[in-house]
Image (tube, rainbow, N blue to C red; front, side, top):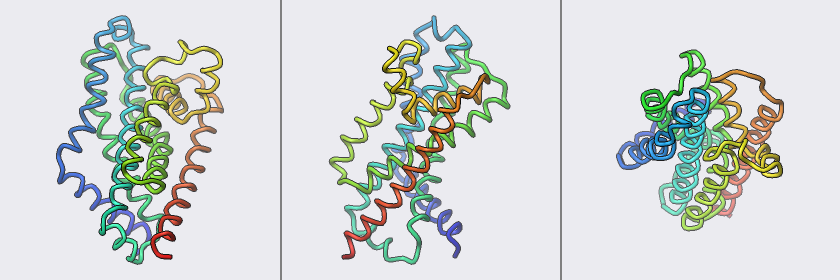
Length: 250
């Protein structure tokens, strides 16, 4: 089988394994929607303004993809490494890139599914609006800008045990959410915090998706940042995968 076929096959069984535990799906789908209901909808100053409401929905969509990626990759991989099944999978003739990309496809599909309820609630309970073509462009931008979060989760999963991964994932998730402007709009930031925020993948993802949905100018630091984070984190994920394999079989 080719690497592509192995990747798709592994992704398929990852999804089947996750679907066997319904609460995992429910948690991924419900948490971002509840955040929108509790933090955005009651704030009518934001919810009744089309521009602000749309950006708030976009920010929570980015947060949904980010939290799903960090938790699913970081915790699932770290827990799998402590079970006998994972060492057995490593004995099979499949390259490391196939397993890494399989995690991206399977968990990435769940992350994109998690934003559908957010969009529905945003459309019904707020003044958020966007043409269908722009919404589809936003999905594409979200899929592209979500790659660094997936690779960061993979790096956490392959670099530490599950007990440590839980704490690290929580710290990384909330730190990126706050500094990336996913909970508070960046125009409320101090100048120094706004400057730091521009170098984070969460801020870059937010700005890229807002540009895809609402239009406007796309600053070079946004797409260059997404590209740099994707390349660096993907290379680091492969490196940690190979290092973990070496530690097991030396």
